[in-house]
Length: 67
Figure: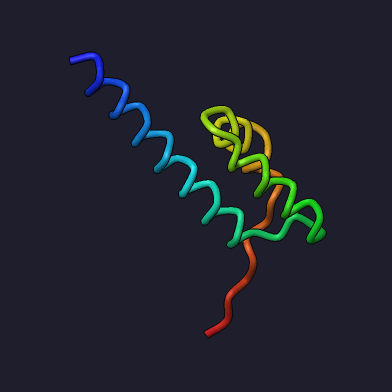
């Protein structure tokens, strides 16, 4: 039973990490260095996505797509 809980938590954080990385690729953070830094932070296990969504999510601006 305990193993199922840990697997569920792991899958949740894996999906959260993917969501953060995909979101980072779709946003402009002002420079490539800042974008890379947020990408690195998002890849830190467990805490990275939480830090990104708490702080970095609002710092990036959506890149305008035409057509």
